[in-house]
View 1 (tube, rainbow, N blue to C red):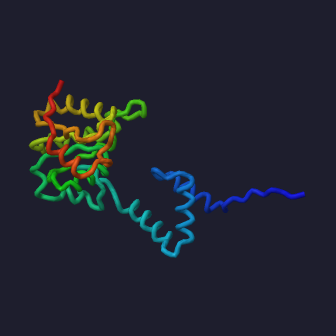
View 2 (view 1 turned 180 degrees about the vertical axis):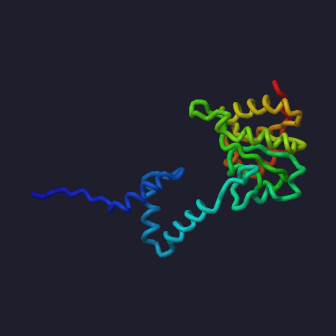
View 3 (view 1 turned 90 degrees about the vertical axis):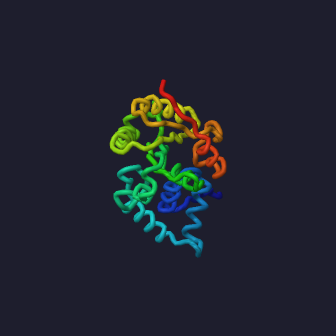
Length: 207
């Protein structure tokens, strides 16, 4: 009588695969391929990868002014003297800053909210960096504030909320033109589309 045996990977390898599946866009199959490549390929250096992850976690922190990644108190953008007199652009995530910087058309500063309003997910104004934004505007009002948020339902709700809130400040508030696809985030836009959206931004009025 023949027995059918179920063969599984050893526990450390299964744990590695489970951790890899926590990454965005990585499913079980991809996690398996990545884990095996890290352990078997002569081009892989998993210990160096682990050290770089550890160092990034330990050394990086949020910029005290805008919220972008930095190893100092202020990030390279906020510490640049030539940007301080230019418009301030409000975005959702650090990834959005990189997307706009790649266009090479915006020379101002940024403020990262850390997300967008989403009551169903328990994200209200208190969970976002809105209070630091208001404090920043009070201490150093920019010539213009640009809202560059996603064109989905949550992004539109956040834009509307901020527009009404900022109407009291007397600062010119605009938003990037919708050369962006409806329902899409900035990170999915190419440089040309994002450049046109910035150039065609529209003034926002409170209501």
